[in-house]
Length: 81
Image (cartoon, rainbow, N blue to C red; front, side, top):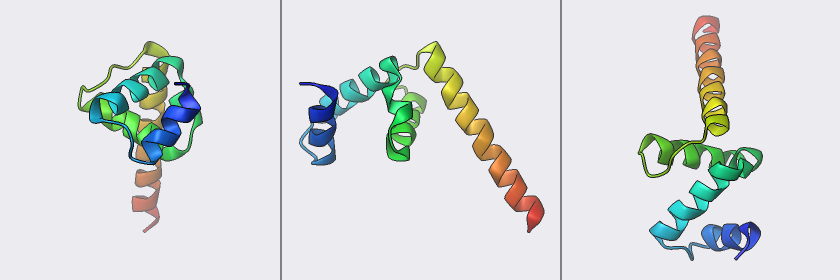
């Protein structure tokens, strides 16, 4: 099953936990997860942090960059309050 069909199955709640983890691992490995809507990147990050999937070097750099950006936004909001 290709990514599109598997993503649709995921969104419809039709994948098992194992199939979901496998899907996210493959999406991280290919980098496609970072090009999809935010839910996918956040879910991938959560799975990486939970050590359910592993993060490739390129993806790891992306995750770190997203975390740094989020921290900067939080800091900016705190200082502007």
